[in-house]
Amino acid sequence: MQNKLFVGNISWDASEEDLQTLFAAYGEVVSARIVMDKFSGRSRGFGFVEMSNDDEAQAAIEALNETDFMGRPVIVNVAKPKE
Image (cartoon, rainbow, N blue to C red; front, side):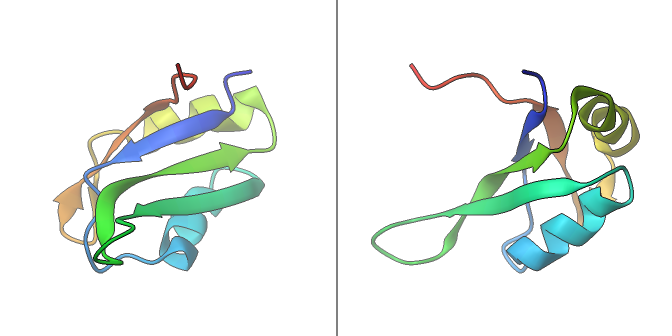
């Protein structure tokens, strides 16, 4: 499964809705989540987006990797499984 994506260098001001909207242009977004620091409650600057299939995920990677999103160049690639 290559449809779960890691998104890095996310703006501190971005919401999960912003992330979902960004990726929705490339297909159906199953989920969009920004990882939050459990102590401060602030964004940790990265998150995960799950697309409905691998083709849509690949299209999103090709279109969005290293592009500007809310003033920062985001990194988009296939998420590595948790070890």
